[in-house]
Image (tube, rainbow, N blue to C red):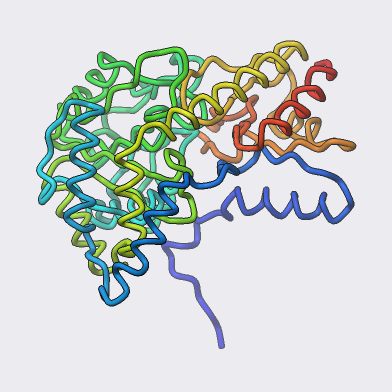
Length: 393
């Protein structure tokens, strides 16, 4: 039998993080201890109050049946209360909030709700792969907007031609930006919104890392600028170390939230009741978030010092759980990643070109950078920093 892949899948690449994990397995099979900064999966345990809430809810909801697609009323009210405390924005939990199965599912599904074949979606490069993959699966056309030094690590919208902007349906904003760590201030968010709204382009703001910021005031949300034509995505995966729980939420323009819910009801189910309850507990507590933020800050500072001592530019971002150091002149992203991967203490990092897409002129905004995910335990971060500090570039 001849098996033919659907046209919409033919341009999809292998997921870069899967390739990283395969390389880690190879090194470990060779007997090497590997310190893995490649995948942004926290290694700390999920906070106890979250685990206890989940355990209690398993029994409480023993006969609850299928969960609600949009999340329980208690979850959506907890989200609305958190957004009001964090950003000073009042949302209608019935119409302007929906739960999601993490961020990846929701980010991908939004394209099915908004993008027709041939529509353009403006995607930051580097950026979260589902922006591009979701566009392709919806048979849209991704247009890559660079986030690089030339634009102070802001999305360089000046490079979007008018004929492209006229066809654009949606603009993805990642704030704080992964992987550069760039946090936008209120004025910068307003400029992005003004550019998009003047052209009738929906702003989809990925704010999964909004609680991780260092040495600055808490970053604002795009929801503070406007809800008209704006939908923001949040995840508890990093905020509350709940990657395995698969829970997040989207909030904003009721029309956009409604369209996302329509896709969800046709393509997936809701978050399980016991996970829903665990998320409510997580949103009601900030102490564990502050503790996590301090841990990431300490790891960030340790690695930054070591990178500088080795002669590398450690990056200037002040948010997320990543570092985005720059390779020496003349050294590619892949070459730097290979240097760091050398035994006896292999350090796995992500080459910048793996998580960035080439621009129309062929340049790749990720070239010359690697990404460190600040997720290993502190003792391993310290050991990695010792190795880096002894290297010379």
